[in-house]
Length: 188
Image (cartoon, rainbow, N blue to C red; front, side, top):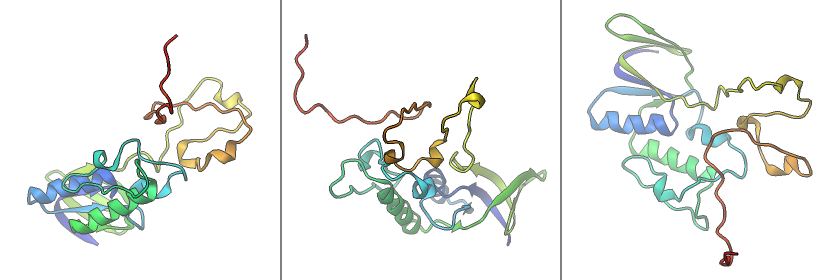
């Protein structure tokens, strides 16, 4: 397929859908190209126990509140995938999938977006690809000498895989939420 549009959005996860919402409100012609076969972004590939770190109302995309998940204060990944799928349909966002973007090139007046299914020409490109598909493993001194298991978050599935093992987690992501104490503590 070859097409001309005002804006090409690369990535159909949360950021790509939010961009699409605002592009639609501005009356621009656009397309969202997503490499995955189904909606939900990276949320459809996360570990089993992953939940949002905030209640649904604080994790909404523009224009549509995320509904609460019955019995859960912090929605799980399946709930987020369902919300993103519904959001895409509700706003009739022009998402094409699966489309792999191979490159973006300056053609002077326009940008040329090469994909595995054709070429798009646009005045602007928004990269909303996230980091899930190309995880970054930093060069940490001694990492190559470590004989234990090392993995990136994209390969993690469940805590039971590490039962009885010593584990260190390295990273700067959102800290895990802690349950409030069950009883007040008395200062010493």
